[in-house]
Image (cartoon, rainbow, N blue to C red; front, top):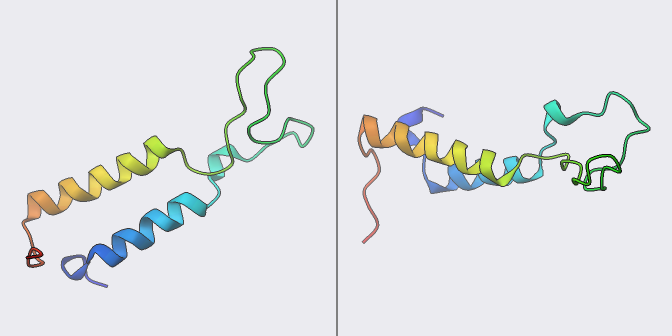
Length: 79
């Protein structure tokens, strides 16, 4: 699909994918490490979840929004 034809439906698909897809940067190299969300006994911090963080998803949406704001609206606004 051409970028100028993207609609809210494509944004919804992107967000849905980011919410469910595993983040390859968070693959465990040692399988004996704790499961995602488990507390690290040394630091007391929870282990990161396997997927993308909310802040990453928000950053992606902000980037897409900025791109379309810069290149101008191509879809008529809702009334």
